[in-house]
Amino acid sequence: MFPKSKMSPGASLRYSLLNERNIPAYEVSALLRLPEAQVQRIFNNEEVIDAALAQHLASVVDGTPEFWLNAQRNYELALVEKAEKEGENDGSTAQHKVIHLLKRAFVC
Image (cartoon, rainbow, N blue to C red):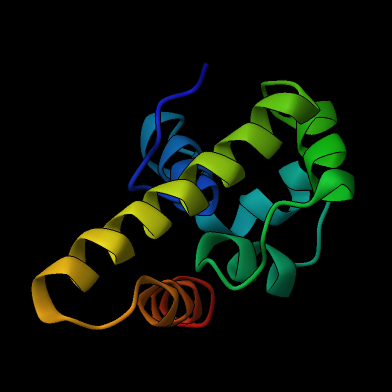
């Protein structure tokens, strides 16, 4: 089972490619075989990892489609847990907090 991560799959991918593998930013789009704008949306959490994107990432980077889908799911679960915890502290509903955190996470 994958641990819940406070880092989104897009941020993890960005860190892996730019920092750990030292791939220049201008080469990432070519490596991923995706338009630059889409790569930036993934990196900035403006695009979630769905089944099609998970399949594509698995074919051009490391991991399996299940890895990428689980990473996205676990990141979202971490956001939900954070929202529930914050809701306990300030009296707002967890549902309201989840919506707020998801909007903040996916629309920068």
